[in-house]
Length: 287
Image 1: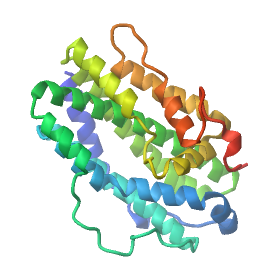
Image 2 (image 1 turned 180 degrees about the vertical axis):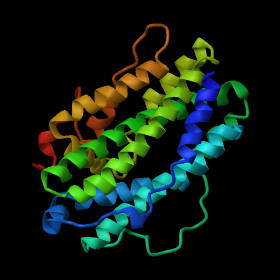
Image 3 (image 1 turned 60 degrees about the vertical axis):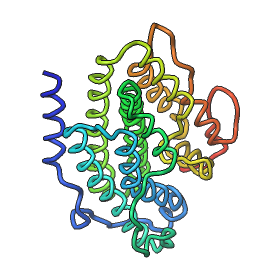
Image 4 (image 1 turned 180 degrees about the horizontal axis):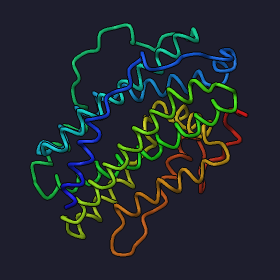
């Protein structure tokens, strides 16, 4: 029955095409305010959403035995996310912001990163591949929830500025697609988890807690990630992080032992801080 539910979710996603640029109303009320307040955020969104082909190359190397349903989802996910990236690149162009680095050059063939190739070799052991798949699905749910919340808060900022066309044709349609991605990942992770042993679930939780970083962040760009997420969520950032941690606890918690509060710790690292959580006062003020 749940497999049918996953099948139905993928089918609904396949029925929802990528958002066409022609469907977007780029009418802007105050371009100066948007440039001043959101230039870095728009660049970050376009870059992260545009990195999906790399993510898929990594995932399919890490999990060589992905099933047909998993691969159907990846096709839909790639189309949606690349369209989101194109929308924010087009908005940046309308605002006369500089082009992103490399966007004017043909993309090179996507190759998996070395770390994924190494773990992919380990994944030839079925027991480990099943662990890695739970890590992938749980991380997907965590990332999609954070992305969903970021678009929700960006929509609130647009609305407060009177940029209603951008709310109606950019943040709301994208947010609905991100919610559908989140629904797929959560159900797929919960379904897969039930096929694993307690030891496999514990290992998946340990790997996730040790390797987690907020969606889109890299060791070279974690300061930017911190500014973007706290800049969007402001005083609500702890609630966003709590919700992401809750997903991790639901999908990866085992034996009634709570996972470490690694989501807050990862964001604190992005902000160059130590302690229980981030301090949005050190980030740009959007209000």
